[in-house]
Length: 282
Image (cartoon, rainbow, N blue to C red; front, side):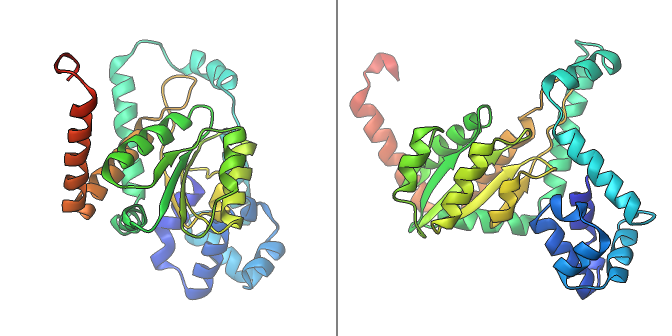
């Protein structure tokens, strides 16, 4: 379990001052936790003793133990496929189907156990808001998740678009404003241009939803909602199976939220589809 998950799980048991500290840590995770006790206490406007009590409530022996755990998370989050390949060769035999399936199941369970129904409802409410324009974007690999989500949302509501990277991001920033909702996908190793684009969108007034891994993309600092998905796999590459499942869950709950509006749009889509296809293509 990551420190982020520990903080989230302990939130209801914390005192008011510890909860304030927890919110500071989550808002700037993990960078805020890499500060000294005095620096973190000053940032959260709590005492040093509160910081020490807080990390012990999380299960650490003290602040150095907490600090070390965060450092290890940062190192793990920065690991390249090549580095994970070396570990993979030592610890795993290729072709073990049961191991792969067990890994997927564990990742799915951990992902959905970490995400509360209340958080999902808030995200779905934003996705269902007809006054908002929705932009979906991602990185070199996670962009396919953004594109898939945009395709699904387009069939259910108006004003949805997938924004590929590069110059298109700059073009879109010309018109970004308070009506816009950016759904951003960013996984380790986090892309600098993705972070810059999300921050720029937020600066222009857009609301940001981030879908990321447990170590949290820096985009979390400017996001209204953050949904984390497990990424550990039996191969040297991270897996997007839990992230894809998260997308499917959002789409499913959005359909329930939209009700008749979703059905009406799907009926229109079917009619349009019949106009532009022949019988052999259906």
